[in-house]
Amino acid sequence: MAEKTSIALRNLFFYQVFVRQFSETHDFHGLIKQLDRLKSLNIDVIQLLPIHPIGQLKRKGTVGSPYSISDYYEINPDLGTLDDFTLLLAESHKRGMKVIIDIVFNHTSHDAKYTKTHPHWYYHKADGSFANRVGDWWDIIDFNFENNEALEKELINVLIYWTKIGVDGFRCDVAPLLPLRFWKKARQELETVNPNLIYVSESVHLSFIKYLRDLAYDAFSDSEIFQVFDVCYDYDIFDDFQNYFQGKGKLKTWITSLIRQESSYPKNYVKLRYLENHDMERLAKYLKTDSQLRTVNAMLFFLKGIPFIYNGQECGAHNRPDLFEIDEIDWQDYNRAGIVDIIKKVGALRKQWEFVNWKMEINQYNSDTMEIKYTNKTKTIVGIFNLGAKPRPTKLQYAGINQITGEPIKRGTQVISEPIIVVI
Image 1 (tube, rainbow, N blue to C red):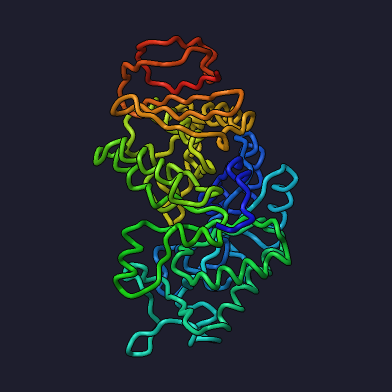
Image 2: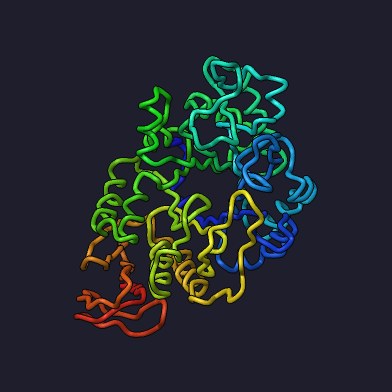
């Protein structure tokens, strides 16, 4: 954890945008037209998937993965121009929203400019051809950071360039696969350009860390990556979350993992809390009811950390946008499941009280129902969430007004299916 990381970051709301799939124009202008809508969701930070040109050689699909980058200094012409991007920054800032970009420094496309100017910066196979460390990522090739100060200097220059353009931070793709010394050096140099940048690390699943270590490669745990980064993804426990909803595990396992984080990480740790992102299936694809969708989205805003929404999540989209093709999000029937209303309502309550930095307690009522409670010297705020597909009789210990519906809540056993928030 960076020593200067403020727990105030937990009060921010993130929204991830896949620009290609976000609008019918598939570009920055399509996103700019929707900024007011994002602001209405109480969004503070827009996190963009990579915005750079995509390689042609060994491209996956028709338009390719945005994570197979050919030039870090350029804008993908399919998304617009540099002027279009700076307009997006200006319009976002005008509305009080920050923009962070996705930085992919583990690898490039096979035809990236560095393959011609600095081919020795990469891993190579025995026959001299370029290589990567993960077999199924065949559209990219990996940098070799061993004894490679020139590479590190160049990548830091890339970060400085975009910082001067006006971005507000960086989401660093598979950051645990790169040397910590590089990230420390990069952050130190960027402090002199903009000391207020937000640094987000995409962490990786525990099984992937072990896989890479078994191959004798470095792969850092969240505890290690927190030495540098302000915010870290939640992959260390996300399998427990998914296993419960997919019927492969128990709710108690995920709750235990959430509580364990409180003692495993520094006091000022900040986790990115998400239900879905570009790398995983839509939540709506494996949840059974709209009430589940509403409840889980409400619960998201009660987790200690930064609530993270992936574009389309708010309308209960089932289809995960394809990384390699044009696959526009279907925005019809925008508030079909009432998720937009939940995000606005619970998000506003969280903004009003900023309770996630109070004392937290998590309790389980039954196999599907959990309570997340925050307490300070004068108030207690309780969220009660039946995450299952069916209404459950639940013995409530609190009386008051449900802050979501305005309806009275009484102590005693009640059958609940929708989220309940009570201020005591």
